[in-house]
Length: 253
Image (cartoon, rainbow, N blue to C red; front, side, top):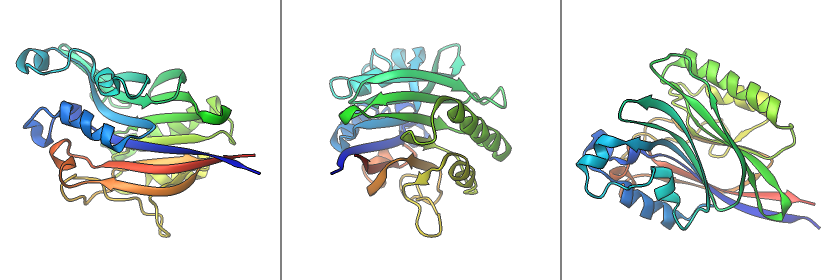
């Protein structure tokens, strides 16, 4: 008889903890909303690791890096990879997990030097003795760069994971033309959790009334039980992107 491991994952481009157009600092509201969702693993993009100006200008700006502030007391393991580094700080991707992170690596996939990009890869120890490769991505705004970055992602995962190992790739793909998925599916044997029979991912941007299919969750070795798009109020006051969630099951005999 087979046993199943249930897993709830969420991906969210958090816009560095500010609302759309940077009108308000929303990192405290963001933390509460993530805790209400209560996922097991969280994939975050545009995470502010350090910003000296915000710390000076906002009295309630967290003293810890955003990924540590968001993870505090709920997600006991967290990894961060800085991509954009500037005089007053840096930002990048983060993964928060209820389960132990066995190792973490931030793979540079920058194409244009003015647009630094990275892939944050963690191997996470799931209940039941399973482990899964989890990759948080935030790809380029430019189509040619995205194609190079997706090829680099596939090459990297081919080198560090076996084809039968569980895999989750989630994040902001910036894939306005909906072309990225075909390359990932064919190279890595992935399924996009929201795709319908036509293979169309869900709309996730802008958060107030999503029109564009920018954010994705791809899985290998999991069954998709349920999916959710978190848009409109209150999510549209927190970030310009909607958050996406998937409830997964992994069967082990």
